Image (cartoon, rainbow, N blue to C red; front, side, top):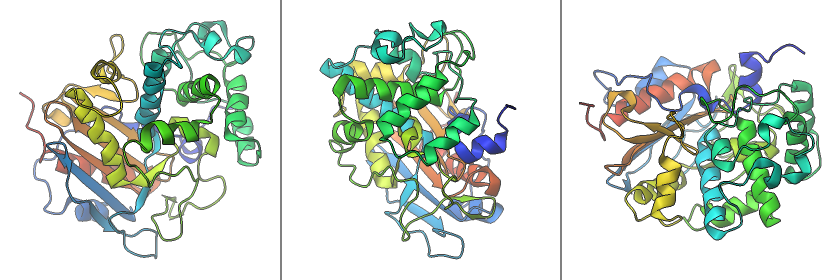
Length: 374
């Protein structure tokens, strides 16, 4: 079959590779007094939300625009789809299970998922959880079989069973490159890590991450629905509300980024990682946070994060990521030395300029929490 087009990927798959470290985006010279309103005026994005973290504390949420085209205004406390920004949450779940002894960082994939060992390409057999979580397993971004991917929308099996079916096919495809070399962004790697957690614990990924990550941090708003409720922001694509069955990723894609939550709950997770970088996080040991936050090998790809020395020409170090399912766009940049950061979410992606709107807001607000790099 022909290769997937960018529009196919934007419609179906998580595109967090858009700007994982933000290094390509300089800060603006004169930020607008209301950067959210300015970003909406410059694009067709319906709505935006942003939250600044300063000295480890969340400031009041900023919102602008509409929950949906022709609908009500965005409100503080609304839920937003954060796409592949959920990858750092999946990596944190894996780290919790490693600390508990249910998983080990060094176990090869063929032992993590022995039921798939006979079908996987030989190049994948010895990759480990850090390889998967830092996109250095040599895996393609997603399966290249779009027809097979489409079958998951009508699959009535559990998400756990669906993930194994997806992985059985994906692991038979040729590597994108050698393991433990350059970063090769892979959603499949995160599905493998999620499946390994399920096999090690006998529990489904969704229950695990709620119990191990979200509940301890008081993140009560998190959901895994393909579409939100009628009284909250809706994703948009190509000038319409994205509410058709195949507009969103299938639910089985959750470990790679299928979560929606309030900005406040997202900030709770980010604040824990900021505190963890200073030796006082709630979820993990200090050395584990350091491991998650470090670029692997010679890359800036950490475990669920991009490790940036000077994002947007601002003084780091910082942890960054971007996420989208083609209908939403979300960005995070947190500065580990200062406890400051910015979270931004838009209820549209590239087809309506949501990516550019979110980037403009990030550039403007990041200047208020970080100094220029030397």
